[in-house]
Image (cartoon, rainbow, N blue to C red; front, side, top):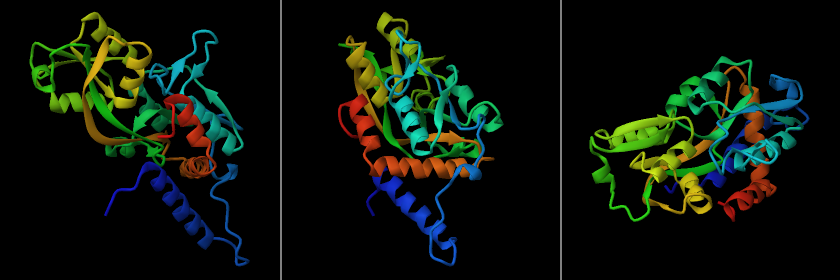
Length: 271
């Protein structure tokens, strides 16, 4: 059996959820709505409060001119909120490895939208929405370097990663002999490779492609790693109604063209 694409998965999940809800509808045959505001709680009434590490372009970054967050995930959050009849509220940036604990503990933010891969480990701590982006990993070095994955797996080499990411996990598992330098942002990692401080960076492929195109033309990807990852939105396990509402909104965004428009804005075309 062939694997479903992200779009097919989201749409299939929405149809399945709709079927279940219809089965619970009134005897008159009217299906119940997927989720409404009475079925979930919010930190601030009428607002979807979001957290992320805001230094992960093109998914999230800070606009230097306005001081406001921007990026693919920022636009996704705005569209989600609009589809849910809410306003969006972004909190200040925090380290990536603190996002899941913050959502798990509750009280500060409703969701983490952060280019976050859905993993079994994270799902033990929080609920994850249906996937909305497909991703792989990559290894980035200075352009013209003779480095390979094999030469980098050496005690003399230092690999930069963003702490708490699946890129860091991949480097730990596949480059065990190299020294790993865990950093707060992927920008610090890319800049460190550019300056020669680190030998390579392992990070999400959509991010490395964008960074090289926009800011680091003197770096190159030497390996694209087919990890088959998918990004999801983290929600507290104590708030399943919010997860359901987000999944319904994601499905609507797929079918009404909203997601395609956001993808075209940040990646040049629908993914």
